[in-house]
Length: 167
Image 1 (cartoon, helix red, strand yellow):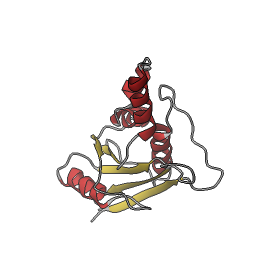
Image 2 (cartoon, helix red, strand yellow):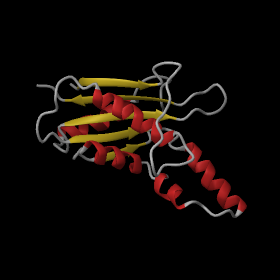
Image 3 (cartoon, helix red, strand yellow):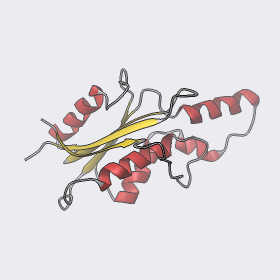
Image 4 (spheres, one colour):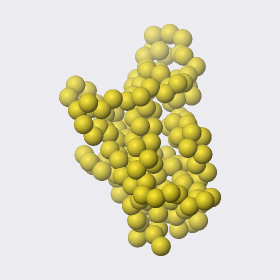
């Protein structure tokens, strides 16, 4: 029952780069989420109706692995942890950044689905989006699936779709 209003992926070409975001350091995860969200919102067909409530839903099995590794290493070695890492270790932080920048007024939700397919957005995310729309919490939902690469040859990847319940 969900209608797709727009779609985006990262990377879309071999030349794709991520734009750094002030206040987010060390990791590519938050710029990855922001980049694919911006692309998807920019590709929306037509203007959003006035006063539309757009929910942001981030689905990630692994989350921000680079920040988690940095925090763990700092604790293990007794090194001072940069305060920005506490802020960015919360996956809602980048969603708040996107919501503020785009003036989105719907709920912000992060889930860790049971599994992430090699491509696409996990079914758990579509189920959650459907609940947000059916409950009246939002008029549309921007679903974002993001995973950091696990090592050499495994690049970061993300996908986003903007959905609503249709007419």
